[in-house]
Image 1 (tube, helix red, strand yellow):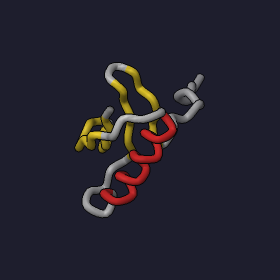
Image 2 (tube, helix red, strand yellow):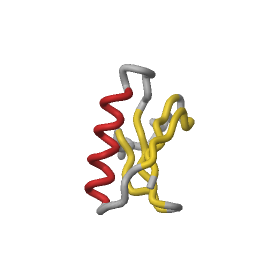
Image 3 (spheres, rainbow, N blue to C red):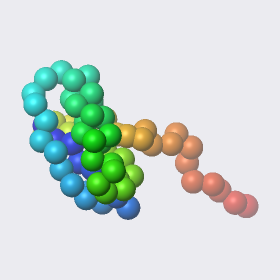
Length: 69
């Protein structure tokens, strides 16, 4: 399991997580993010278990791009 720290839409760093239920992985990731955000200004993070994305912080906006006519 991995936590990818994002900046500018790209992976800027990675933290390996201890195995556990999804909720524990998310909690671990928030803890790592809070501890490291003073080092480097990350935009957010994603939690992955292999090819399965578990969580994205901050959550993507449900609004699509603005459409002008």
